[in-house]
Length: 372
Image (cartoon, rainbow, N blue to C red; front, side, top):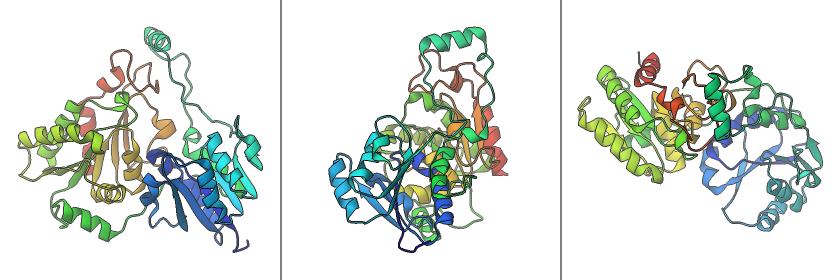
């Protein structure tokens, strides 16, 4: 393989999805060890890729930047090949206007003209169908989904990115999603938030109670609180509470309630919501021995850094977008057996039975598997 080969990978736009592309990037690096692999990613995700062994350089674009401006900058890179991971027409148009000679992506309406190689969807692909209220009501009347087959591990979304990378000769067999942080980064975040670096000290656990997608993905706030208090009583752990700026009121209220229970010593609960950059969030998640989290971007980040996660699942499907590889015993994915889940809706149109069916006892029991 010529060392002059320059591959541009057009990355995806959301944090959790970006983590799910890392197996494809790792396999692409194996298949093209001498190539220069550059990743085009939204600027907000740039720091996710620091130290990643599959990526040689990172190019970014800002929200609102025009497709013509992006293409103009890409032309200067003189790329020989573009691998387009998103399914959008715009992402294919960017590399077309950049005049990259070889352009590979999924064959989808309104974009195939812009690609030189159109990859057919892989067998076993499953779409996330949003159920209507009528469907939800009918499923619950019947008591269970009608003859719903089991979802195979190959349906997970990380396989669709591996399928695209295979068009460049990459091995389509999955490897675990992978991100990198350094020991110095972990030590720095512990120092900043007053956490001891002594391995003999209390265990550090994380709570991530938000979910940007919508309330249907959020386990009830009071249950996060109750689980945290019970685990602190049992293990004397410390808690870091994660979230973005929009999650600050939620995280602050949870921190106050845990502190008020006096299950741990002063300073054993810290609210980090809105106080960390993406890179600092990665280091903080790596520092934790365990994270209890909704199905959201930081869940994927924690798992890719090697931190076990406990996840209550409601409106979404762990078979399609779960953390790590399917069946990874490091992670505990908890579902209530209700007929209408997964519905893939942002808000529950009935009684939120999928999340209300997951008890504090369920989550504490799962977490204690890692706390021994």
